Length: 146
Image 1 (cartoon, rainbow, N blue to C red):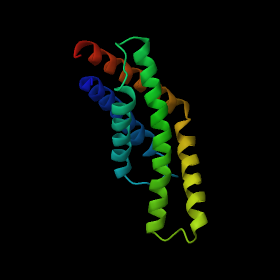
Image 2 (image 1 turned 60 degrees about the vertical axis):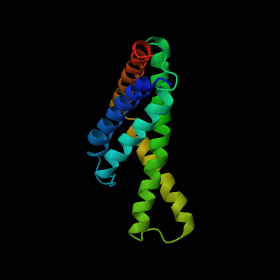
Image 3 (image 1 turned 120 degrees about the vertical axis):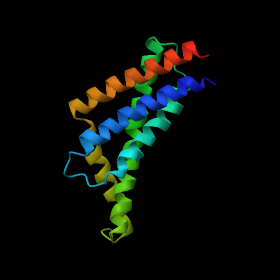
Image 4 (image 1 turned 180 degrees about the vertical axis):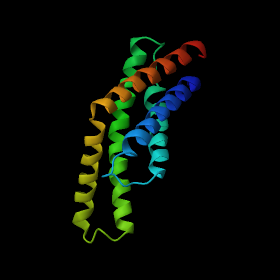
């Protein structure tokens, strides 16, 4: 169990996720999730980096870069699902959702809004660079501390 590789993958992907949340979600007026979602997104990034990148990081080469891409794809999927659930919980607390069918439509709408933000070219660039750095850092940690 390469724990140092898992820690590096988790930390670097958490930093990338926190940066994305702080800069892009924080400056989008259509998204009203609150500042605590920054920490939720960073936690998702850490857990995905720990499990996805750190479990098979390679040794700092192309395998590590591909592990970083695998982590970013997993992060996008899990953060989209979590964002939709987060928005539905906020709407349920404010009694904005009246019927059970509106839960699924609200979740889908929120997930699509999040994906629209994620597919911005600047966000894709930050995610790609963050994934590459996460993978290489995890691979180098695997090489030197195994």
